[in-house]
Image 1 (cartoon, rainbow, N blue to C red):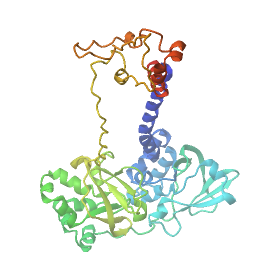
Image 2 (tube, one colour):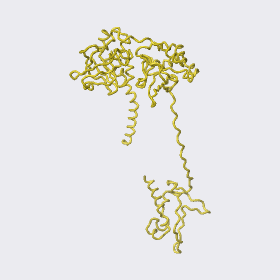
Image 3 (cartoon, rainbow, N blue to C red):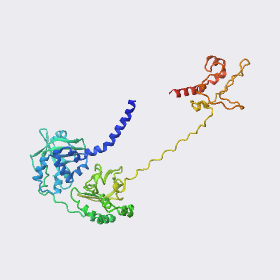
Image 4 (cartoon, rainbow, N blue to C red):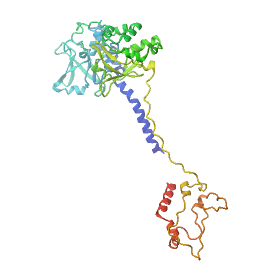
Length: 460
């Protein structure tokens, strides 16, 4: 019996493995979770989370993070980084994120012994000139980072802390890297963006603007107009009409605020980066919890970006504004978070095909117990070339399946009687086959095939 259980055990094992894979890959991509296993880099891990860089890392794939140790971070915080604001810290930390997968072996084999790699800082639009690019050079077989603003000072790239090839790689370095222009001021901060004014100028969004102002969520959005930025999904007036004013009135004030904040991500995503956001994305409604009020983004076959809100799925209909650090997109339906409206109903299953009806066979009173009904009811084959009985041999009447009109039907045959030989020569004896053409005709190929089939059925 053991060998029969193995397929079932294997099936259950692989089913459990498939269930665990999504959560395992999510853990691999989460830089905070990965660095939690390396306490010597906890200071850098905290800075990434506090300044919004961790969220940017977790939303991307094919990246490398250069991780300075605790002593290196402490020296930076108490030295050149003392008093830096959140924006400047974001710029410094995002310079440590390479937009490509690198590991020590790959770096040691750089073509020509050096490479210039784009960092996350360069993509923000806040880097001065090419200050967001990192120069990596191999010196005596060891990869090193050329410190910005110098021509011969380097930071060594050490061992690999974590690596999941071509997805994410964490490499140790011996100091904090400061891009040129950040400490001295760098680029001036962008002018404040009046979000409600931009949405109002686009027209057809008065219901959304009115709700934002009535709940005070407009001020919450305005407070996120600096790095790491803000992405807003603005529903049209028609979207609110389809939802219905009655549905909004049924929400508590807390739920209404959460619904509106659910339409904003606490990071800047231009159009080309939306579909590459990896895994569930926290919204402003998520607060300190990254597990509630989240959305997922994907691109369908037509190239349209789809927002899965849990309670419904909504396509992005257009771009109203996109200029770092704010992006605003039009949607034609209000996003319905599962935390408020429940999960969207699944598509109904296809109807089952109608059952195939087979005519029922009426029972026979003469069916012998223990035998198939079809076999017990089968009539004896009629003689094909029967000869009249000779005067010296009286016919043997068949009384097993026939009933005289004047008598009651006989009781069903017992299984042992079904194959009992009748009087005279055996039905399968050579004498009977040679002397009686009636029996020979009865033992036709069709009847033989039928008999063998039944015998095989009972012996299997």
